[in-house]
Image (cartoon, rainbow, N blue to C red; front, side, top):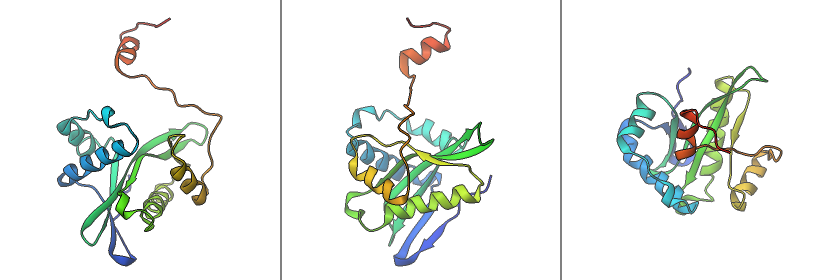
Length: 172
């Protein structure tokens, strides 16, 4: 897999892959994102497990956006696979720009970075989900040329339901 590059942009903006030493910053940004999405109660991550998943197992990648030595945002992404296309895609799990750094082009810079990475890695698609109430994000993504996939709905198994199915139990 092609490594994610470090990019220097005009205005002292730096985009770079996160490393293990960035874990505290990453966790801080995840908590800030959860606050924004009204999901703080859902953040139950274990720092040690997260470090292993990200920096040892490569379960996901993170790009940090910095300007003048201060972190302004991040994107966490991983690869999925399209059976119809016969190749992988890039899936954006989370993107967050600190409130004081919004409207400076940082969100667009992160999305452009990921689009370049997807092209560089020969991905068929670049996809993500957005909360249906988050109109500013929806408007932003439409300006980038993204289209909603309204015919699809996200399904999820977690907690007891996931464990029950894994154990062979069927609900209903």
